Image: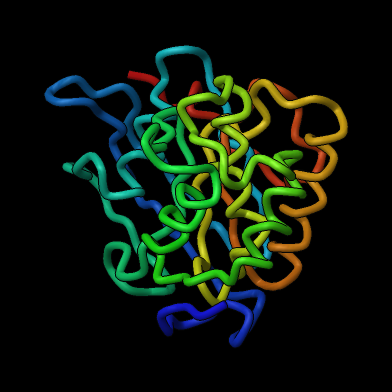
Length: 219
């Protein structure tokens, strides 16, 4: 598997700060949802982003993914302004093409981050999410839950050298207990290698080492 070269958190001090938010305003259009949001996310850290409905959890992740603008406040990545290295963003908007097969969709999603998996790696990742035997099936035939698992399969293959920061929006939704356990193990492995994770979940996240509560910053 090949990837575009990026600066790896695992190659540096694991105590360094990966992501810093300073007095950030979470807003959609002209409507501010939260103000004065601050966060220091260290390499090797998993932060559980929580808050009541409407506080802007998904909006914040979209801002950090570059899909919505940051109008007020500052974002620093490894000491640099902005996010010079694209974070991995897994959202409710699946980004799956119904005309592609399961294997083709997974390969496409990985290609977006400069990663070119082998056929064996694609098969292994799909087996990890319980989609073994579905490789050549058109994604149009999958259930919503199965389609979501394609987006999660890339987590099995991505490392901090490829995507140092993961932004995960409700990654445990519609997963059974066994798959949640696999996911938590994978998140821990990624963090142990020097990666950083900011994630939302309506479920408890036992592997998180700290919490950011947007309810405390509501307008």
